[in-house]
Image 1 (spheres, rainbow, N blue to C red):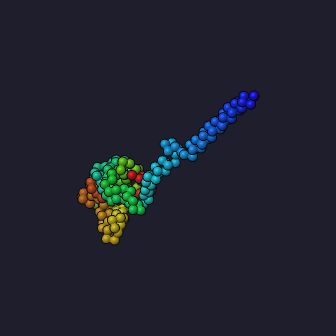
Image 2 (tube, rainbow, N blue to C red; image 1 turned 90 degrees about the vertical axis):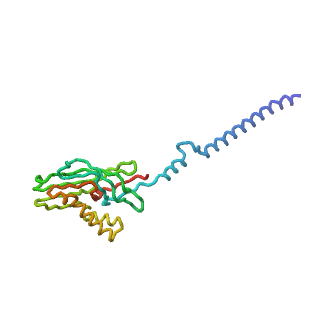
Image 3 (cartoon, helix red, strand yellow; image 1 turned 30 degrees about the vertical axis):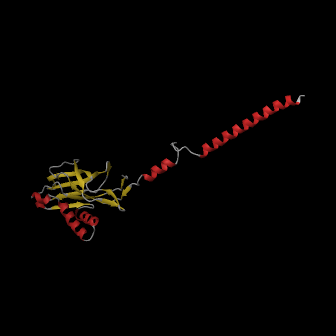
Length: 228
């Protein structure tokens, strides 16, 4: 007579334990699935950063001693310019590294007059020294250090030009960039003419470099150009 009364509670307890076990198993399975499938929208996910790094081009490193050929956008001179004055120029020959364009033709450049002395204040002659200080590639402005292009004049109209990587040597470098051989010879003539600048046209000991004068400078430190 008491068996049905005992069997009833036992069945209810068995069903409750079975239901609890199924619920726990389902929760564990859901947790395992969540852990094994990272959220692609999470900032810590590895897929997005890897894609971003892969699409970003590597910087171009322009080595030291690379020649940068420019033309003056404005005239400068031993008498008309002052030490510390800035001047504008335009890159005339594109600069490439391993087939990649680092500095395009037409890029804007800025320089500084390192020294300017009129005739009579420098052993009877004049002196004009120029350096490039920056170049703009795309929308980025890069500070640079270059060799100085120095032109001096002495008594009786004698003039000399000296520049590390400039003058006739710098012109030869321009020719080499343009194709070497005959180009180098032509570049040497261009460099020699740029070395004296417009000084030979003044008819006196003052040094004048008019706008469009071609000058060559050499990088003293490597330049890292970021990918565009």
